[in-house]
Length: 95
Image (cartoon, rainbow, N blue to C red; front, side, top):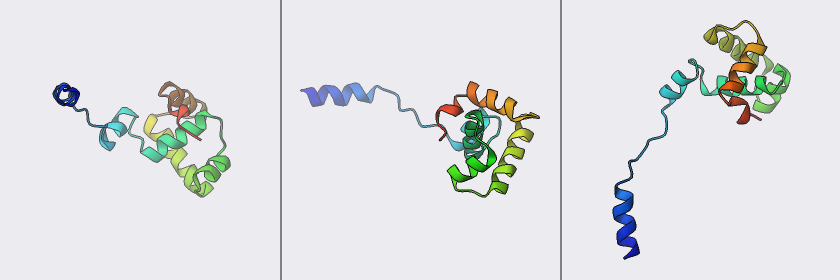
């Protein structure tokens, strides 16, 4: 009886698909998943060197990610990125 109830009860619950990469990218100013990760680390006051170590990337790659983030969001400073990332709760998932 319990199984019958659960089967019918769960059939009425709408299935929600996880957000696609495209919708996630759109929701975060066009940033890629890696750029969002870097932005979150910027919000945690990590240097490019520290970010490179954490993500196992070259420092130059991190610099390029930072350039892309600044460009896509129309910002001119890491402080603006940090504030934006904190607002978007990206700093909670980093590190």
